[in-house]
Structure formats: C-alpha cells, structure tokens
Length: 290
Ligand SMILES: [Zn+2]
Image (spheres, protein in one colour):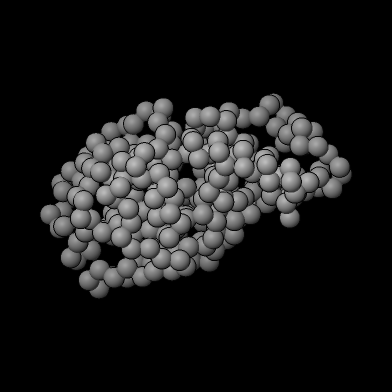
C-alpha cells in the first residue's frame, strides 16, 4: 500500500510542479483592482486574480501579497499612492502561489520581502521560470515573526503545512484582523497542493489555530471577507468529510466507490491547468498513509 501511495504521490507532485507555480490560474481573467478599508488603516485590494492588502503605519506601508502580474503589482502601488505618500518598504507573502507572488517584478526591487522559509524555497525552485530571481524573500522565519513598524507590532504566524507548506497568517491584534492567504476557498473545494506537502488535516489544524487568535475579520485570497462563524463551518465541513471517508475505508470501500458516495453527481471540475486530484482522493491518500 505504501509503495502505491509513494508512486501516486510522485506523479501528483510532477503534475503539481508543472502546473501550480508560474501558470497558476493564468486562464482566469484579471479584473481591475479596487481598495476597500478593512479596519483602521488596514486595506484589502480586490480584483486582479487574488485578493491582496496593505497596512499604513505611522512611518510606512506594508503590503501583503504582490498580485499575479507586474502590471497588477504596479496598479496596486498606484492605488496605495492615492491614499498615502508614505514609502512602501515591506512586502509580506502569504504563500508562494503564482497568483500571489508573480507580480513582484512590478514592485521596487529593493522592497524588503518577508515570507515563511518554505515559501522562499518554493520560489527559488521556480524563480527563473517565473522571472523572480531578483525578488526572492529577504527575510524568512519558521514559526513566528514580529514585524515592528513604528509603534505597531504585526504578527506573522505559521501553523504547519496546510494549503501548501509555507502558508502564513498575518495577524493585526489591535484591529482583530487576520490575512489568511488561501487557507480557505469559499466558492469551490479547498485547494490542497500535495506537491508542496499540502494536507487536509493540516488545513483543519491551521484554521483551528487561527480561531484561537483574538481575531474577528479574516481576509483571504479568493472571496469576500469572512468571520469566525464561516471559519468554524469550514472546519466542520472538512472534518465531516474526513470522517466519512475514513468510515468508508474501514468498510473496505475502494476510492472509486468512495468518490461515487461523496460526489453523487460526478467529480467537480478542478481548477488550474492539468489534472488536479480531487479533495476526496487527497483525503483518501492521507488516511491510507496514516
Ligand atoms: Zn491564490
């Protein structure tokens, strides 16, 4: 069984490696960017291909994610400049997906880029292909980092592999706001990059850790802002699906049978180029490897 899973994992890795970074949802239409105030001086930038954001502190601007293209990156800078003339000194990357980092070349080359250590590793592997050789993170961390800006302290937190293995949460305790990258997807199935050690149980763990924060407002990469209730429901849905699959495995059901039960009207179309493994199959593989 383990050998089969190993071969499966390798083939999944190859597919994901080829499809998940530079070509991330390149067929998705990019929309004009708009800025919305989230709380205090924290803003969300909607449009493009993913949601990004920034905070204006007393001395500078700190951006969260860089957009998918250089043009969108520049558009985001222009929108920030319409609100403040403070320098944009830092760029925090929530994770390494192309729709969040490939816009970096639109930003000043000397901007201080901060990410999880695994995000930097993933970007290094793909830097030449994605045109990011001059935009690799300058500062990395493993579990937690405090970014100080004037009298503000912004917490960067890592809760283990989830959507990928470098997803971080940008937490603003004063405003009870957290940017959570792609740890949730509201309008489609959770996206788990198994080629980057993504894991459905890791998603549950990360979201439970997020709910331990004193936060009420959660900005994520693809959809509208959510509250604690929506995150709680997301955890419940994932746990129910995991338990159901585990139960069917214990009854001796095959993956084909389990898919028929969990996807009665057929497997959902997976986003992105190339074949993506369905969530049910990912959870099945995780349980079989336990
Ligand atoms: Zn994304």
